[in-house]
Length: 173
Image (cartoon, rainbow, N blue to C red; front, side):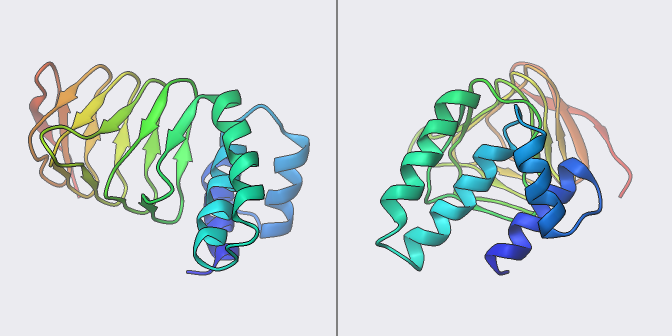
């Protein structure tokens, strides 16, 4: 996907159907949302690979929004289209890859443990305060409940909750 297509898909997750121009208009006039971090994360990741001389400038702006909205991620993490960080503040996203149309809420941590990092499938939702650590795979369409601690693989289309997280129910496809 091109950078413009990625940005458009991110804007659509928050603002509904829109083109890139109207998404950028929302960016400037509907402030106060972590979509600004997502926007600059995408720009920084793009410049890291394509326009290395602009990377430091974009990285500084992204770091500003990291601190402003409390959303942190490694620029090495590959995020699919439609990334939505619904609420900022203490969101740490360190994963091998994150699929398309994933949603993360406040206080979510994806991180390293025992030498491995998570792999997140498509259409995954991780609710407030949940922690996903280690070499685990979150299957497509799964939901991680608020406050859950996930240390094992999560099958597709399932709801996991608790500490440690366990299967609560299967979700319909």
